[in-house]
Amino acid sequence: PNVLSGMMQNGTFRGRGLTARFLYCMPTSIVGQRKYRTAPIAVELSRNYSALIRNLLEDEQAAEPEEITLSPEADRLLEEFSGEVECRLKTEYADIADWAGKLAGAVLRIAGVLCRASVTRCYFLEDPEPLVVDAEIMQNAISIGRYFIEHSRAAFSLMGADALVKQSQHLLDAIC
Image (cartoon, one colour):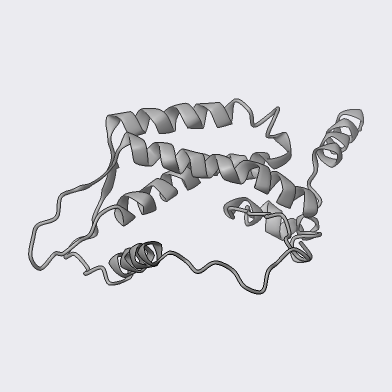
């Protein structure tokens, strides 16, 4: 919170779109409730996580960059989500309009990461199937994107961009 506080006052940060390019997470503090000993992470979960990270980091480089495409259903879901966000930019998301205006693009990038993480590649032994974001992956990416909306609103509020300030500025602009 201390880092975020006052960032909006820096015209360069917001003016160049820097603050709109992050996915913010403002978790509730558990200070004062933490436990010294916690339950260990399940072995299977730990193995699956390690395998996923290895899969992504040890990826062999293809001769040509791989394209990730959208299935027609995934494209439709992204279009619907984009339209939903767009029509709220001047109302419900007015206080975070610059951030929310980039949300569909962020969701698309999240879908690409989820798609790539869902397969194991081995270029030496096989010619891999094309990477295609299906409806399930896109729905998961949209769910992740929705998660960040309220967190971004909280972060922007900490940075000095709350709705009351924005509305007051709009009123001042109209009067002058």
